[in-house]
Image 1 (tube, rainbow, N blue to C red):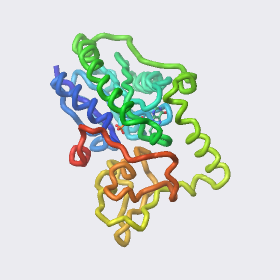
Image 2 (cartoon, rainbow, N blue to C red):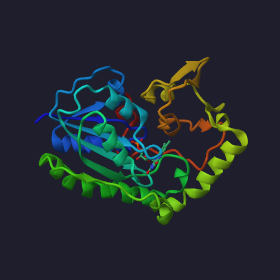
Image 3 (spheres, rainbow, N blue to C red):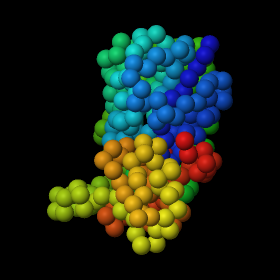
Image 4 (cartoon, protein in one colour):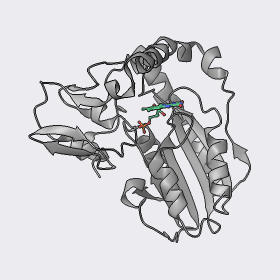
Length: 266
Ligand SMILES: Cc1cc2nc3c(=O)[nH]c(=O)nc-3n(C[C@H](O)[C@H](O)[C@H](O)COP(=O)(O)O)c2cc1C
């Protein structure tokens, strides 16, 4: 059976998960950003998977846009694996409904806890990172068995309250309040991505941006209007020169330890 895995990833967590799944399932690995704009896209594989990070309880926009553009989602066996820095919440239920709106059936939806890469991520320790990364390896085989047997009906979800109940997640709250306060007092535009004076014009940010939202102007990055919100530009900058309007919002650079910059360049 031919299996294709369409993935999106900013800092490598979802890429590492997709790569492991592809190896076990003998599947083809396809960056969704190479196909998401194609109208009336026709799937040919009997089994397809979507692997992606959760952004604000939803899949990234390129994954949604790709699904909207597929013309025969009623045909394959479909699964989704999302990586979450905090909690799955109802994001896979959202995905299930999205797929159903295109006459498909989400047969399995799995959530993998991985290091957080958004606002507040500096609060998570390296030890916590290592634990999360190691525990994925225990989930890999049961998920593959489920998918090989083409099982149905398992969709992970957690309550919204888990964000507050989980000690690790609670460490994010000061950053979330700081962000909210900043937006309310200074406006969202004050948090636009910018490069500081130590930018060396290496173009890594432009090359890593899988939705091509960065143009170089006079040697400096300039962000356009279709950012997917992955923060890859921030995390992979070799000079740590990128910030949200000069504010770091309790973020520190991160990428999955077994994923290299070259793996992420599409
Ligand atoms: C803008 C943004 C929003 C995020 N929102 C959520 C969220 O709602 N829930 C969650 O569990 N993790 C959230 N995260 C964390 C990522 O989903 C998580 O770290 C993911 O593993 C990153 O995957 P990647 O390395 O493939 O980019 C968010 C991260 C970013 C950058």
